[in-house]
Length: 305
Image (cartoon, rainbow, N blue to C red; front, top):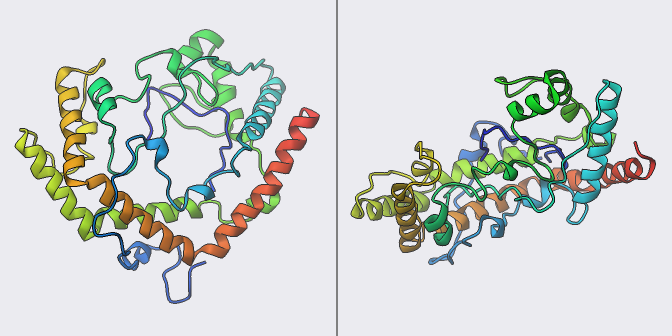
């Protein structure tokens, strides 16, 4: 769920956090297909409207223990500043006081907030605002940075220049807060497991049936969509047009009528829980290794790098 305006993470812990012998190893093509359908309530409760209120079993394994993000952000900033200084550039992160914070990524079923649908359509909170592109963990677009600091500064920070959107060697990627205990582990495991759960959720019979009911509901309002992934992908104008607002409102209304979001979330939670249980030892190792990462972050903050 990324929007390329282009916005890039600056701070934060840019660290993305074994199955039984009879199961395919995590990441194998057959891993998702082998998962049994989880048992869910006959009438699952509605999903939260706000994406930030959606909590899944694997979420705790994607980052540091709650309450330690600020320390990691400070350490990351110190390392970036030091890296840029060694390349001959000054670096001062924009704290963006009072600016909008990045929105939580939408779940697989998409927008589920009726008020947001009526007010913004499929646009994220603060979309279209230059100020929203800055803040803790965010920086302005690359083109704007080139104008303000020059191409060499941007190349040193990112390792690439627009129109490219990726490249090695920039201070953002090399100034990493980590620890040997963490680096030795399979850091991509949580992401692979979450991907398997999402894949299996989309193909689950109960989700397929709820999606068909949502599609029929949308058709009653004159919209021909097969899945809730389709409407947000349209090229809507900025600011949101009346057509977009009407489509988004119908979308969320139909999710409420069919409980698509509630069913989707219940099923996805079940698949994630199954994968968590199958991979509990490896996931626990990752969580434990975060303590070493945090100790390094604390040392960097205390000593200035």
